[in-house]
Image (cartoon, rainbow, N blue to C red; front, side, top):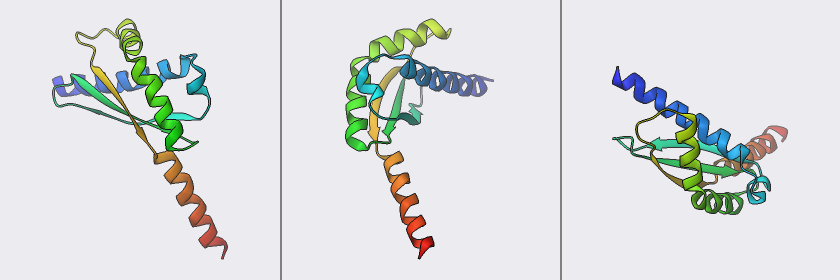
Length: 115
């Protein structure tokens, strides 16, 4: 039963982090398409690593991560307000180039297919 509860908490936290980021009014987050690619939690669930990617590339993702890491306290407090958890995990935002890589691979595949 605890495994099911942990999985439910994980999905709830992931959903709420995504919603909170979308609601944030910082213009640096609106400059490019920012997306949560993956969330990984520690074994005890006390911390989460949130991988962030941008359609504009890795530099835009790094800029967004700087904003998100500085707003970490706000995001944690919003999670606390929205979910009834005993413990709100620590968050670490990490930049990723996954979206940019996927777009480049798609372009290369299209080029190869058009030949």
